Length: 418
Image (cartoon, rainbow, N blue to C red; front, side, top):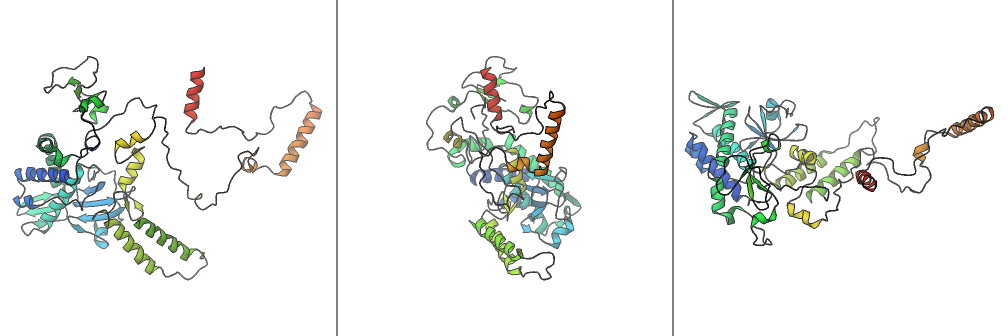
């Protein structure tokens, strides 16, 4: 960490940790009120946020109005139409291969963030309401109210616009500030210092991702924005605007044992129906421990789309950034060693690192090769004694030659010494 020059901290859900489900309930209520104000039915006001239903990383299908939980490749893990969970043939009617093209961003929208949780549940509420309310006629891609047709895509866009309005023009921020005790987690160990004193540089209204690309106008924030771009030195303290898994694992091992002594000549298949039923039950119980949509990171033993995104984009993650205080700046965070499929089935024996040459380094050289090489070397020396090739074959290196994590450090140290 000592090589990192700047540490940046986002405010929402990082510096300011919001209480759940109180904060999501507030966002849900304000979004519903906004939808009703633009013409949606008054009955929607009777809905209340249920934190046991949504999870992050779900995908909304704007064509059929389904909430989908998929893996990293787009394979369907869970499918829900409103509050109704769809399985089997009904799923295959809309997704023949139980697979979606995640690159089709016009149709599929990924609800990744914590701010998306109220939106996720609201989409389920709307689809369920319009599908089951006798006043409306349900269609495959939307619903009708007399001669008026509303597609799920249009409904989704209305929800997106309402959410944006609540965050940027509505009263979400004001209501949060009015009742910090209810909506924001307070660190009991924090001192009563001005919050500005903790940071060297403070930026608000950064408008990410524009901030990282074109950049935005830098102004001092003193309660009122000053016109023009601030060009002076950046000052300190000034705000600138810009357990069940083990059981499942044991069942998988037991299943593997049933097939252990079978090969391609076997004519009988072992009866695994009872094991399959137990696996399904354990998987279901494991999923329901997290909520109706299951775990954020897994569905059974399969990783979700959200899990794959965390592994791809987050080099390091934790429940709180405060955890960094428990590590020295010289600490090197290293990814856990992962065995390749062929390595996981091989017994790993101790290797003496003091061996002059590893057997692997000379595995392609037979004793005949060495004898032939010695003979040729002798003949060459006899005929042309004044010419001696420096090396007839490569020797296994006795020092580190491959690139490892520490190589950059060594190169920098050598440059500094020079």
